[in-house]
Image (spheres, rainbow, N blue to C red):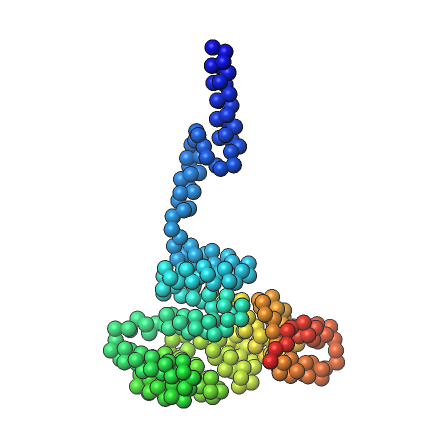
Length: 300
């Protein structure tokens, strides 16, 4: 009898210790709390939605885990192909790791998705215009810019009520360094279908036209919604230096360094910007700005 009682006591002790301390999380007896906890775990194990992947990617983006963020935003897009915010954030992440062409493709797609004109997809004129643009895009892929420009001009002339023709013609003019023509196209596109990405395109165009004050205005509009976009800070830095506003240039330099993994500076820009700084008697601001430029990695 004593042996039986001893076995029972040992069994009870074993069950208690196993439930409390086993490393596998298995329970012989479950409390109400355990049942509730298990239900939560089961709930968490449900397939993740596009919004879930987007939220995870956003956290990784904030923590500068750019490659991880790109992976999660891509998963969100696969589940929801018209997920505008996922394309935008993925573009930011791609830009941060130096994948500029990939970022540009995402931004271009955002513009098309976000355009109010997409509501007219069943419109026959819109369909005809789209066909012309698709033909022009094929020329762009082959780097036949003049042929592409002709197609986009056809799209604009035939369907001036749509923004897409202006956008693509503006992009082609920009590639051909026809900056005045590109600026006119982006102005028309913004007038028809205002989109934040168009402000970036227009800012870059103004920068190349040396319209630095106007470029800064557009960069600020864009960065207000996309505060981690690296290249905008780079051109913002250049704009302020050309305007000899060194205090704001220093702020832009620090923002560029904070958001960029590459932290590159083109050798031509480095020489030009340093020559401007060297014209002035050195003070704390110019000294810190020079130091910030020197710390950047020089590239061709």
